[in-house]
Image (tube, rainbow, N blue to C red; front, top):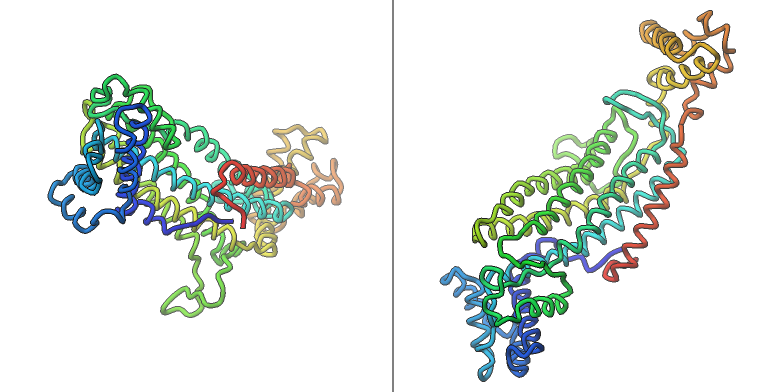
Length: 453
């Protein structure tokens, strides 16, 4: 599935920003004409000239370098391009920050649509892994050591559940994030002759944005929130990628990236085919999380606005969003090219000679009347003996008179069989696979720009 996926950095490139500024000036003119604030003919002329190809871009960029005020230069060039007196109504009552901050929100919204596209693709890929791995038994690990038997599908189910919470956070934040702040120089609509609030609502509707009740220039929390959500998403993607990265090592060998024979791992070690996608996700996620501090600092706006905070905010958005899209693209590709090795999972499961099902053995003995604590002590002693002697846990238990009085060797063997002690792993994997498929479908249905191949 795909949308028109541009290179992420192009979404916030200067020509795109300038055109977005022009789009806002045009939308402002139309809104003001609708309210009788400027002549309709002026709005029509501003709209005709409000395209980048109508302006001398090199000259405009040169003027921006001189004025160090991009919107001043833009308004000057757009006004000059208009015929008649229409140029005199460009940027009527607005201020630089109104235009630039609105542009950032609009560009952010474009990036968000692409993020949702990647999100749906990742959910579908994870759903497939959860379904196919629902019954593939492997070692569950806590403190990086064998804990209990699980299935690969269960591991994926936990990832799905976490990613779905991220989707919920983004969805709940959308009305707050994609919001217009258009209050003039300080945010109290001084220059709009009593029509400021109506103008903001009209312009917001035209741009498809919400409105803040108080359009102060000192308000950045909505955009900062979005970057923080990207950071949380990056943390999850990195966590998953790091685990996969580890499980690809020869000592585990439980999964691999299917990259094709042309991929080379090392310039000097011909045998190596290193993971590529997992490490890319880890690196991009780290760079993305590094933007959170800048975004939080940008929220420390002084008085009714300052350029330092604005520049920090724009830098955070322009850096974090392309990183997020690149990260999610790599994450989706990683999930689609991920392959599991059930035989290695099975072999690793047996490394502890039966110890991984010690909990089930304990509970089985407890149910036979031994009691939980006594059963715990017995199995703990047996586990230590098995580790010292190199025997299996089953051998040690079958030679213990306390066990012989309660269980047959067949019952001991059954209790130590990993496949008989999976809890609800299989059901959870299948349940979360369905949730992931359903959510991916909902994302595409609610956002027409996210389509199925």
